[in-house]
Image (cartoon, rainbow, N blue to C red; front, side, top):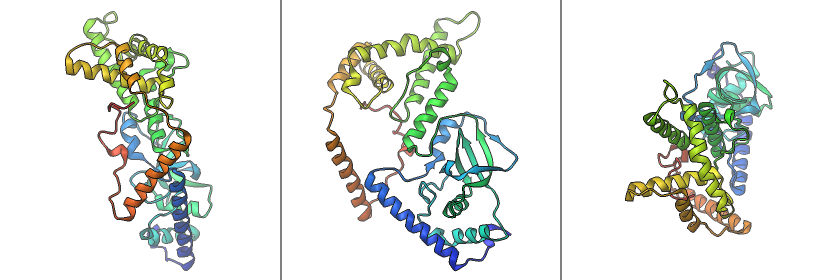
Length: 334
C-alpha cells in the first residue's frame, strides 16, 4: 500500500499536533537566543559540490536520523529536528504515521550523503514522523558525494558552506599535501571560491610566461606557486601590521581577500599598481572600534526585534542570503 493511502486515526492527528506545537516553541526559543533552527538547504551547497561525481549506492542502507541535517527544497517546512511547522502538512504527516505504525510500512527515503551527514531528497515527512516516534534510524537509498567537508549536525548555514568550500578548495589545489598545517580559513562564505579564481588567473599568467618542461602548469602547480609568491607575502604584511588584532573577528584569509580586492579595484580605477603594504595601510584606516560583548548582545537583540516587527506587520520575508548573487565575497567591508 502506498504511504498516502493509509487511513488517518485520531491518535496520528494528535501526534502531529504535539510535534507542531513543539516546533512553534523551539522556533520561538531559537529566535530569542539568536540561533538558527532551519534545516540546511542542499541548494546552498549544490554549486560548491557539483563538480564531484555522485555515486548512487544500490542497496538500501539504515542511516542514523540524527545525522540528517538538511533537505532538498523542503528546508523551511521543518525545524532542524524535523518538527513540522505548517498545519497544511497534517493530513499527509498523519497518513504516514498510520502507515509506519501498521502493517503497510513506508518505502525507504532518498538522501544525499556528504561526509558523515545526509540531506533528504525525498521523504521529509517520513523523517519527521520517525523522529516524532523517537526512532534512532531509518532505511534510505543513498547517493554519496565523495567529499568529506566535515559537516556536523549543529552547523549553521554559513559554517556548512564555508566547510564545503574549504573541502573543495583543498581537493582541487592539494595545497595541504605541500604545506603542513595550512592556515587558510574564512569567516564568511564565498572566500574559497575567490581563491580558486585567483589561482586559475595565476595559472594563466604562469603559462603565458613559461611552462614546466614541455607541460603547462596544472592547477596544483599554480596553487603552490601562488601560495609562495602571492598569498604568503600578503599574509606577512597582515601579521607585520598586526591587522588581526585590529579586526579580531577576521582571519588572515579574510583580510588577504580584502587587500587583494583593493589592489584590483585601484588598478582598475587608476591604472596604477598598489603594493600589499599600501592596501594594508588603507585597511588600517577602516579598523573599527570593537564593541563590548554587552553592546554586541544589544545590537543583535534589536536586529531580531526589528525582523520580528516586520514579520508581524506583514513584511515580506527576506530571501535567503545564499540565493543573493551579491552574497559572495567581493564587497569593500572586511
